[in-house]
Amino acid sequence: MKIISYNVNGIRAAISKGFITWLQQANPDVICLQEIKATQEQIPTEEITAAGYPYQYYYPATKKGYSGVAILSKIEPNQVVYGTGIQHMDFEGRNLRADFDDVSVMSLYLPSGTNIERLDHKFMYMDDFQNYINELKLTIPNIIICGDYNICHEAIDIHDPVRNKTVSGFLPAERAWLDAFMKSGFIDSFRHFNKDPHHYTWWSYRAGARGNNKGWRIDYNLVSQPLEHRLRRAVILPDAIHSDHCPVLVEIE
Image (tube, rainbow, N blue to C red):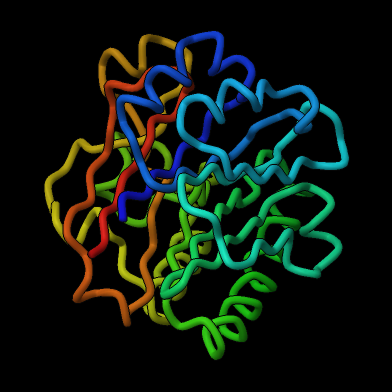
């Protein structure tokens, strides 16, 4: 099963840059999208169906043109769950889960901490999300949480750890939360296979950051521990340029 996570930073903009052609070439079984910034009615769903993804699930934010997640699949899920049931999380369209026979796949868009108010919201979200996942794993142990976590885990995951140590996304408390979340029963699938530096998934649009590879690794496919023996491959796909992020891929048996 080939699964991709991709923050498209606006699905309509990504489609205008060739996203659907790329999707056919990448050919995942399931793709989790973040920041779709559109409702289903605004998306060319028939084109996506024609590309081989008849099962499409969209969970936009209440606020127009903001946030939102989606899952596109070649395989029909047994169940799709929209949101978490936690109101302060769900109105921003940040969690969508598809349950298949022996694995569940979630598309996650964790808030950024662009100012003090949003940073407080981010920490509240992270605490509530941890509790939600702790409960979920009791009934669904085989889960892959794909998405934009808006946090670099370690110094190796950011181009300049010294100058960014006071910037949201690399704050010690954020990194500690992500570390604890992983240690609660998840594998960073990319690092499971690749320990090398200079692999990133997001670059600022400013100052030629992408061309100079001055990036951050904030997009992850976190795989629950019971699936470890089924991990086959995990890679970053930096050549896809429909967004300021790039896709991340994981394959399980």
